[in-house]
Amino acid sequence: MSGLFGGSSKPQQPDPELVAAQKRQEQRVEAEERDKRMKLAAQRRVRYFGGRRMLLSKTRQDPEQGITETLGPV
Image (cartoon, rainbow, N blue to C red):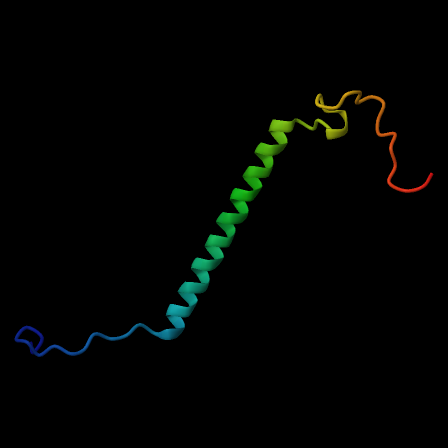
């Protein structure tokens, strides 16, 4: 009854272990969401390119010839 008539006490602070556990869980969930977004982006990229190899892309002059230049002595 003392709470009804102004006899209030200080609000209790949450347990530091509970706060730390909650923060770890939030970080884990954020990391999982980030991984999921990256996987979805990779899947979209694969669908967009459709397995087309860059060596045989349409932007090369003669893709069937391949690369004739080398970096070192032959």
